[in-house]
Structures are given as C-alpha cells and as structure tokens.
Image (tube, rainbow, N blue to C red):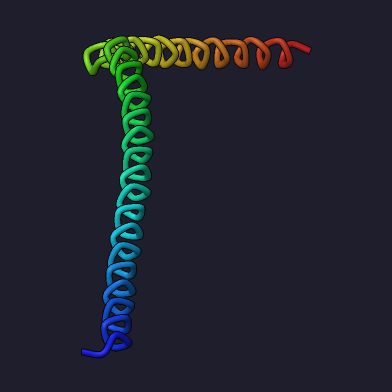
Amino acid sequence: MDMEAVKFGFQVLQFLVTGAIGVYVYMSKKDIVTNERIGKLENDIDQKIDQHGERIARLEAKAEKAPTHEDIGKVYDKINQVSDCVSRLEGEFAGATRTLQLIHETLMERK
C-alpha cells in the first residue's frame, strides 16, 4: 500500500467521523432547544389553567348566590299582585272620573 493512499483513507475517515459528530451535536442541540421550548409552553399552560381555575371558582361562588327559579317565581307573583292593584285602581279612577263628569255636567246645566 502506498503511504499517500493510507493518508487519503485516514483523511476520508476523519472527515466522515467529524461529519458524524457534527450531525450528532446538531441533533442533540436541536433536542435540547425543543425540550426547553416545550417546558416553557408547559409552564405557561399550567399558569393559564391555574388562572382559569380561580376564575371558575369565583363564577361558581357567584352562581350559588344568584336568584333561583323559585326566587324569580316569588318576584313574578308580587308583580302580578301589583298589576291587580293597579287594575283595580284604574277601575276606581274611571268611576271617579265619570262621577266628576256628571257633577260637571250638572253644574253647567244650572246656569
């Protein structure tokens, strides 16, 4: 074997090994960066979930204090009572108005 061929073979082998190491380092760095990004996203999502949990807890607490169908039914009954009273008063005022008109007509005829 010629010494030049051995040197050439060694250089090719060295080039291939260096290239393989470069590819390995590139891939490992890429994995590290990807894992860091995923870790950051996980932390962000955990924080958002915690915030949503707090918001949901506040909404549930407010919902417990909200009026129920029974409470609204009571309000509806009271409104119906007020409506009945107003209708009765409307009828009474219509009668009083008619009486006043009759009195007015009687006074106007006396002239």
